[in-house]
Length: 128
Length: 239
Image 1 (cartoon, each protein chain N blue to C red):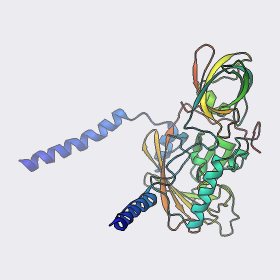
Image 2: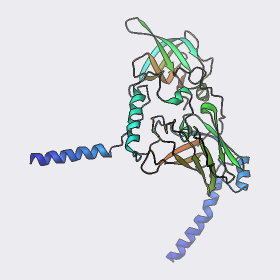
Image 3: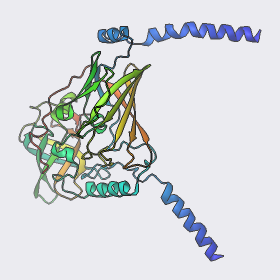
Image 4: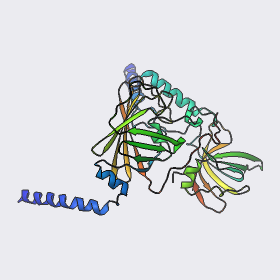
């Protein structure tokens, strides 16, 4: 009887394994989209370049230490369609960025959205 | 009486439909009129994928050959376990995405339509693609390339693009879905409304899959956009 139950259970498991969509998740390569984070920091540099723009931020931790982060947005083409301008960020601006951190734990983030010092919010990929 | 009522209902509906369509449809641009006069649909304009996804797959997995599935799983693993500046996806190092992935990238593309050919200008990596519409076939001695050789024809309201001569250096999507150099891609594009283009992409690749399979992608018209410059190598961090 126990063996019968085991076979039924094994068949159930195998059916699940075979029929499930193997690649249903569409995670973004090296960035952890499932665990987004938000950072506040001061801009130290802004590169308005292809293929992606880069914002460099000094982020102050709770203990007062400062960590440099690299924030990667989409291309100037796509961002300009979403209202971005080359001159919109200056060194020293305090901004809030939300996005996906690198899976390898380096201080790199793929940008989803940014809130500027004046409160304006922009999409980080230019899709909206 | 019943038949009479149904008959009148159908007749009135038939009369009302075109009037309703005319009332709701936006005025077509001039080039659309000229193409319509030539008797073929007009897909001119700037299009952008309606909803970006890293996967081209439909709800179910395609009919993998075992070695293809193994390669795909390896790429998925590699994709998720690398430094952000050392991507295993060759497009990150400015290698062309190939057909059909070039349609799916999160960048717009523009259809320029002439009687003998259609040219698609892809903003991503600034790639032009020629689709010959003059009735020619594929050359017999094609050297495999990233974009292959495309010929097209209209069947009713559908543009059918047939592409061969593709190398095996590209992925079908950003997830890493593999294909071989035997791949034959058939794209069927139709405009379901003025602003929406549906593309049924059939992958016929007997070396990589046990039978052909089809995915569907939808694009939206962006009349206020134009294709801009994109220089992949300018400040590229991938090595």
